[in-house]
Image (cartoon, rainbow, N blue to C red; front, side, top):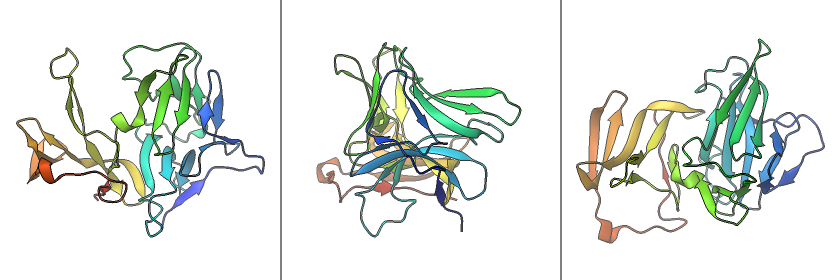
Length: 237
């Protein structure tokens, strides 16, 4: 059975909850962004050679499996088509980009910008992991510029957003859940769950290519969110 392996290889581990301008989170050194309730870190699935950057909620039920506690996957080398990445690192650039940087087996360098959808980059941005597991980017004045809960992956956690946004703007966008390839491989799978654009009281399950698999009508007046009542963890093979 495959499992996530913590990336730290040395005993000296840097643990904090913020990544300031110019600072780096190193998978080689086992660096973390860490609170008592959540951790942002790099890891691997078994000996697959595929790297991941993810947030794990340490307060998400004592009976939950390790896979269920991983509430958000920020990046994986399989999706980025990086062959044999060598100890990736996360950098909060002084110009405002939050970037995963990997050295490949051919000694090249690959980058993935986590906040690529941010409207405009702001200098001296700080990345902060907060208690509910949300990773936010703050301007020097404390304004939230970007947050991970606006970009759910496979799990609907309290505070995350699903649906259609910005419909009256030039940049409408949809937030939805995407399945994992398997229970132990959180690379994006072929199924999505989101709000039906033709009926916002309805959730739809789609297979890659747009094939409709299921619909579920939501009774919004019976719909509530609490830390224990609504934790939608959706895994598909």
